Length: 334
Ligand code: ATP
Ligand code: FE2
Image (cartoon, rainbow, N blue to C red; front, side):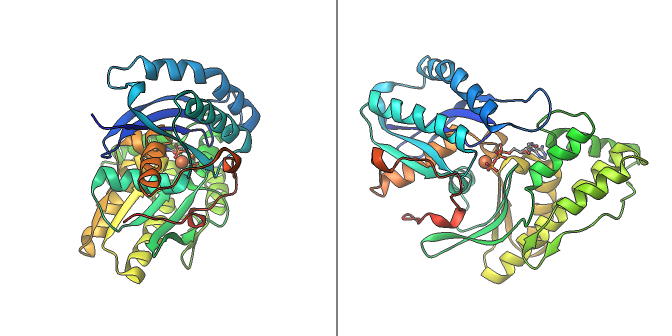
């Protein structure tokens, strides 16, 4: 058995603790999701949730047969980007664990963790990444020692857009899976010949926008079947992401597309990415759903990469950074 790296994730709605071994084997996380009773996520309430559930998550971890505290070699945590109050709880949990286990602490970039867990799980080497989550929508490619942002949303994240649309119809967070189910219903009820509404399509060069699409979908849903609007919303939003991803592949000459982030759980987005990659002789990849949504294991995996590159974080440098960007962090590994 090789040493273990523990990862703590707490950027937004989820507190999650996972681990990997030094050879990069991933172990599933212990997670708790904060679901607001109504409205969107209030950062303070989510942070309170995280501090309440943290002891139970740690106990569950310690009780696992595949986990042995004597093997721990490092503790990593999401240093940013994310909601300040939530990040602070995760950082405090990680500092405590690192001190208790007398292991080095490693602060990591949450966005880069979505990429590295996907590379680990799928075996793709040098992909363009479509990072589609609640708060983020970015098309990313590595150049030199950074993951560069080729294009991104100019307004809201694609997942937040789906969640807001769902919330407008009384569907609680997370709305994405519900929109996917309703969309499938429209396809089935239309005997696989679904009628598509024309909605605003937000591609601006290599950037994206979703707020006009959201407003228009909400207006249409006052008169038309919700299933049809969900179907049309998905088709427009996902096509725009795939168009930008394809442009990024053409510009960079890369032939792999990796999906990451919670929205990468969506079957239709996966299907579109396969079709596009097949048409241009490339390949598409996505991790298992448990590693698309926020999870501690991906933070552990990036912690492993940093640790094996000789990087750790001193306590004095372990303050959170809510505004960290994908391209702020240098990448020391291949
Ligand atoms: P980040 O901090 O990276 O922006 P996040 O906090 O939004 O991440 P994730 O767990 O990566 O968290 O993503 C959550 C989002 O994924 C939610 O908006 C949710 O609706 C969306 N989602 C989850 N499953 C699906 C699905 N099947 N189809 C579409 N969207 C989905
Ligand atoms: Fe995330």
